[in-house]
Image (cartoon, rainbow, N blue to C red; front, side):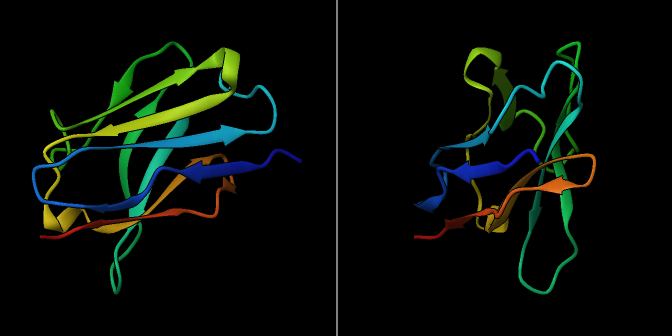
Length: 111
């Protein structure tokens, strides 16, 4: 059973940056499309980034040009670099593949 463990969340001021990590317990990136989702209180879970096995990425308009996802296959770790953060980016962030989810990491953007 693969485990996903997110880390890197925290409190950051508007305009700041954070890098989230998602460590997998074994190699999965070469055969699985990976996703980052977020969920704010009272809202549905929202896709914020996808990285395909061939390295292509997808971002919704809400985060495009601000968020970047990439992976380090040697470390079995997926990353989400978040720049120019806004208050509306406040949420719990999760990594995902298929039906597997991590426990999430809280990101709070506030002055």
